[in-house]
Image 1 (cartoon, rainbow, N blue to C red):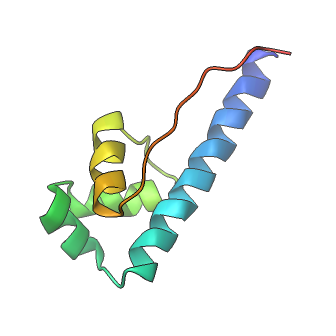
Image 2: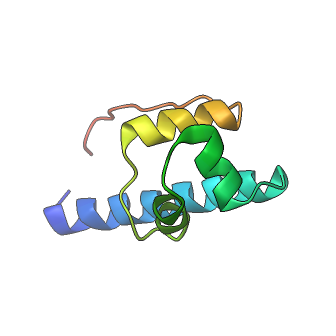
Length: 80
């Protein structure tokens, strides 16, 4: 896999994760400010994450997963 292809895959994964986080927040009827208060993550950062415009820090992912009662699964896979 080329670096260009790997970066494209990371970008797509980030958008997918961003959409999931947005959908979870909306399904729980939480505002960005409420998520900020519950997690300590700045509201502008949450907004940028959900739009796919900001890289998601692992510590933020952990806090958001905990808030939404989800588990995080990260794996390394063989290159093909």
